[in-house]
Image (cartoon, rainbow over the protein chains, first blue to last red):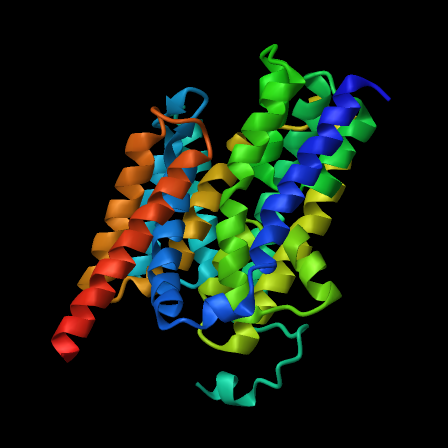
Length: 104
Length: 236
């Protein structure tokens, strides 16, 4: 087996370990009132972080491009109470449209 | 409200959570085509690309792994980058255990499909049945789509357009914003969301990929501790 294959399998095992370890936490730890409370704020923070990360991530840090237009268009759709799938299509349409106009 | 009352808890029903999961699966899976194509272009064999999608199955880590190799980095560096990007999955897993508590063998399957999208769809739902449905349908849906797309991309990569031209990266941004939106009902979650987004953006150029989201999670824990103490003071 080549060295690359070994690193691939080790990396896959490490990724699985990061996932399973969370499920092996003793259930009693999660009964605490504080955990429930933090879980709520954690969801908001993680979702906001994922929005930011997917909007401005670039090869070396940050990149500002058509994804910002997609974010704004999606926000307008949400203010107008559009259903989920419409918001996603609006986001895709905005990014694709801006790129047609020459935005990176 | 009626839907929640009628919900019999069966996993495979076309409820709002299921529809959300399926549409995200489609958008994200199409990215698998570019993963398969880039993996082969960066020197991996077909089976190595397929193994990464089937076994690693965490998109950011997979792109990081092949990105390091493509830029001439060592496999050990590729391993480190991929693992750092996967550390956020631990936080998701703890949250999902608290929410759904999959028992026995189910938790080993749940772990494999614990990713940004399945966590996001699940935690965005109100009822337990919808949280469970959102997690499994999104996780398994993305898994199937991502792996099929990886095969297509690895075989036919050069012939398929960039996902950016279709605006798929914009679709992913819109999907995460739409999942966050219902939670922004008062001033406190708004403030936290803006803070978390700012912290993530400002730290992205400074620390390795994958770490900013862990810093945002740390900020949220501190935020939760402070607001819980304040509530206790008000109660006392």
